[in-house]
Image: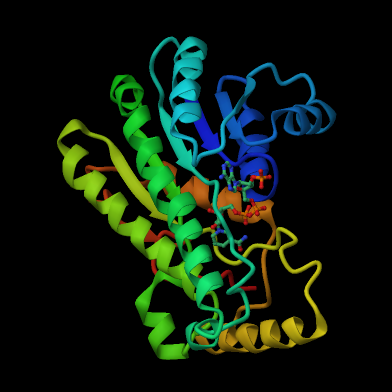
Amino acid sequence: MPSYVITGVSKGLGFEFLRQISADLNNTVIGIVRDKPTTDKKVSEELSRRSNIHILHADVTDYDALQQAVVETAKITGGSLDYLVANAGYVTQLDAFEPIGVLGNKPQELEGDLNKSIKVNVTSNIHLFNLYMPLILKGQVKKVVTISSGLADLDPINNFELEVSPLYSISKAAMNIAVAKFHAQYKKDGVLFISISPGTVDVGHYTHATQEELQKLGAMMQKFQQYAPDFKGPTTPELAVKDVISVWEKASVENGDGGTYVSHKGNKQWLHSA
Ligand SMILES: NC(=O)c1ccc[n+]([C@@H]2O[C@H](COP(=O)([O-])OP(=O)(O)OC[C@H]3O[C@@H](n4cnc5c(N)ncnc54)[C@H](OP(=O)(O)O)[C@@H]3O)[C@@H](O)[C@H]2O)c1
């Protein structure tokens, strides 16, 4: 009866993790969300009769709420946890189409969004991991997964002048280091910490983009195509989640995967090819 806690299951990749993992009724799947009534409704409409799903309320930036989620998780699982998946993320729109120097023209917004990116994507996950550690250490599987992004890798940024999403990328890169530090501490206890990028996935982030923003998006996609000539555009949450789960299932402390930062292919190829 493996148990999972996944943050940010209200939509996007998080909901897809919830959907795929709960399809096996042997899995106990606990999703953490900010808006529990709306997610409960979505689950009852789209994933009805899955009594193995439990939705808990917490904004991941609220330490007390996370503490309460741990207490409630322990009641559901009997005090242990096998998989913890830090999926919730702040994907800022401020920097989605702008390089860091252009954001410099709006210093207060830059600072506000960078602080928020660090708070949600780094600090909250550090608290999440620390608070769940007693349960993870009692679990059988002991895997802690962070959903990262290929945008945090230095090589494509430098080689293909990937200038967009600077604040988001900075926060994801910082979290990769946090993951390695957790590994450094808990390797001896057999806990796997790993950062996995899902690739570029269509979760509707660009639905309301303006014509000008779409042009900038097109320029970024061209750079992606230079980087990976087979790249044909964003993939679906279904395929991305399958890939990410397969990477964490194959990964182990024994094989040297602890503290690493890899793609949905388990390597440094960040984009899905056709
Ligand atoms: N889509 C991609 O191409 C892509 C690529 C690389 C990495 N990622 C990563 O994948 C993860 C999931 O993103 P997504 O693409 O599925 O985007 P998404 O559809 O915007 O989902 C983000 C999720 O995070 C939750 N969340 C945000 N702030 C939160 C907070 N303070 N407390 C609790 N939950 C919070 C959101 O909940 P609400 O509904 O309450 O807002 C939502 O469930 C993120 O870590 C993202 O960085 C995505």
